[in-house]
Image (cartoon, rainbow, N blue to C red; front, top):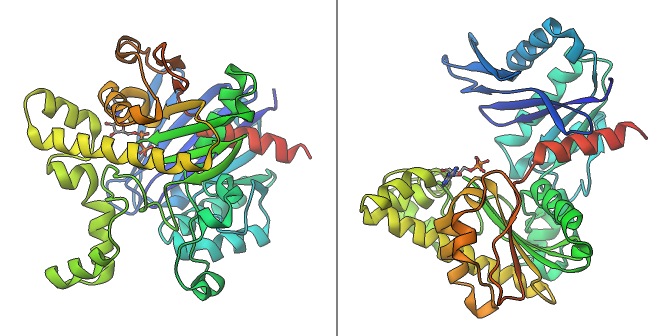
Length: 396
Ligand code: ADP
């Protein structure tokens, strides 16, 4: 069947890919090219239950896609079923409000948005250009993390700074994880009729973490800002803090503002506070064996996630649903419970037995009886969303 989509997610030093068929429901092959730009780079393919790693001499985005093409050449039944390529793109600025078929204008637009995503957008362009060279006949689609949040009202997306900074430099809240929020909103509507006419809070908690309020199917506020640094405490990012801290850190440590931002992006969050790890699972194990630093980091993460959920809920008429997703949201009973403990004033209550026994990788409702808000765990699926957008755009 000719119905498969190659989904490509180019990071600054990694490239994830998957071939999805049957309206995105089946994964024919998936994998990751890791540590691009270093001598230890490799590509791993997962296919029919087996895993195969190929090391890449001088790995970069170009030879990672070349390796994928070589693998597909050896699996012609999969290669010949591919009808389009969907790319995840981190920053679409104010230019891209929905997914688009890629042409030279779109590539130029993605390049213009690179000022706010200097590591990601150039990597996406490399991935797109290599894919055009290696798969010349296939249409390509760009799916933007920011697009879902273009529905925010100006009082939510503007920062209270001199307006010329917005007009001349486009400094405003953009928000991220939009593809995940769109998936959750649409999936919830398949479970609860009319949820797309209600108020929904979503906590996407992974190594990167944010929250979103969805009013009648449209994003009404979100926690990340001009970059993914704003908002929640994350694996290695501080999230929101007093902006004067940047200057204070520069002066105290005698470093540049870029170095200070590097600390806030890569050495803070769960890692910075625990001084152990950015990984939630590792910290939960450390907490279970009595490590108080791990517990403090996790409890701060929960307190701040709850604070931002309450904050974005001010754009809703009612909180009918709260959804947890992402690696932490889907798997950490402790953090779901601790976050909901902070939200009792909003009448959000979960059933501890349901929370502790939620089946992995499945949708479940963990609300207690005496609550107005349904609390859900819904595994996200950004690749599926990218495949569906690609199918829909190439059919027109
Ligand atoms: P990202 O896509 O932002 O890189 P993920 O959504 O994959 O991140 O989430 C990664 C996080 O999920 C890590 O902190 C990891 O420890 C956490 N996680 C995964 N499984 C579990 C688990 N069983 N219990 C607690 N945390 C988990």
